[in-house]
Image 1: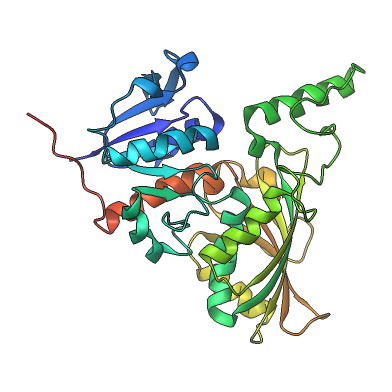
Image 2: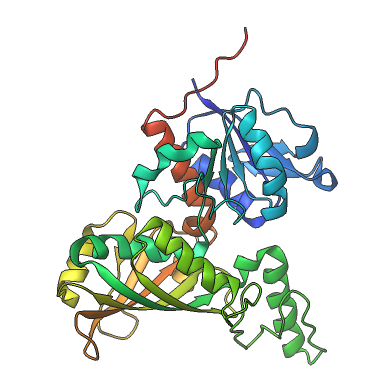
Length: 344
């Protein structure tokens, strides 16, 4: 028997990607329901060769639904995830609403699958921030081998991380530049076309942005609370795919060759690291792919036991939709959820 799955926020970038990935991976569904706000009711979305009509979230009964994949934003999740969980439906939430709740596990299946059992407290599992997810897929096997003490990361994050509005703004501004029209900034704080913006999410009192704080807090929750982390998060004029330049300091010695061998065997990782023109991955090659790509692996001679890495991944997939579906697969694999018995 398959699972009844609801995708909440089905008309958004990540919601549509969730539907694609459920179909691509042959997820064991008996039924898929597309949900969104009332204004999207009746909109059509694709699930494989089927077309689903979007239903309204606020009138939907979750009592016979097994899994809700939530990608409708933090405010919607704060209101609805606890209600859905109480109806016996497991919520896998892509927003930041529950990531820092001690009663909600924050999961990347390749990093901390053992923490999934904590979902029973609220019937909610949280998906991490897209930039943290890909970083930790690459760092977990290295941490296991040589124990990371400190992480310095600079991100180069695509506009799709800001949703459809972000992608539309890059397109509109780029076209405006070419035809000499006025360039308007609406979604972003400054022009994004042919520019970079060192500001993602809101500023905090200490001068970091919320995006930078998320990377620190989530790394400590999922990987190791003792690791020191500092991040600078930058929005770049790329449609899909986040990139990260990561500097690592380890407790134990580890060479670039050892790191390369470890990462080649690590789940979810794909090493593309030739010291030649084009022997590395860029965001455009990661789009539509599931892997977290690692390139430019080299030793840092300025510190003891230091390494530098370049990590790239499709933020809509591993950073969001794919990770959520993998969490659901992990729960099924471990026998944590079973299809509800349907009335005859």
